[in-house]
Image 1 (cartoon, rainbow, N blue to C red):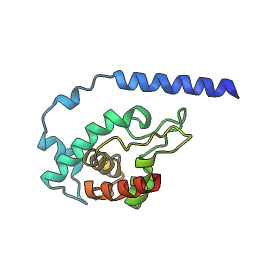
Image 2: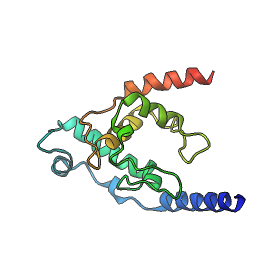
Image 3: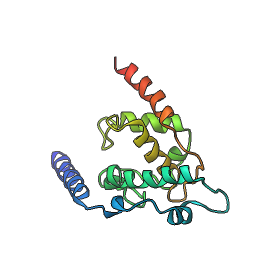
Length: 158
């Protein structure tokens, strides 16, 4: 059993190093309104310009902060215990529970707490995850929602 945990820890550490070392040239590109409309708009929903910018920013922030474990396609990684975010009813369900999970993480599991990220960054990432890969919640999480639950989480820590 100890061998398993040693291997798991080693593989997890390697995956984090590798994902952190990948050069992401997409972050250097300016906002492309036409590409964003093509990526996000569909027959069921048309996003306004501000929302498109939030989703595109969330996509880039997701790649940087979450993609190493959950994958660029949101399919997850069973080897390290990162669940799929694609077609995940928890991700697209009530925002409060998902915000709480991301802020607190999953102690004793692979999911770290993301309290270090600011409210705007977290809102963009969670909005992206709730609308990417066919999740289509057609709603955005706001920085104010993050702040509301961040305050609750901090109160619990006292």
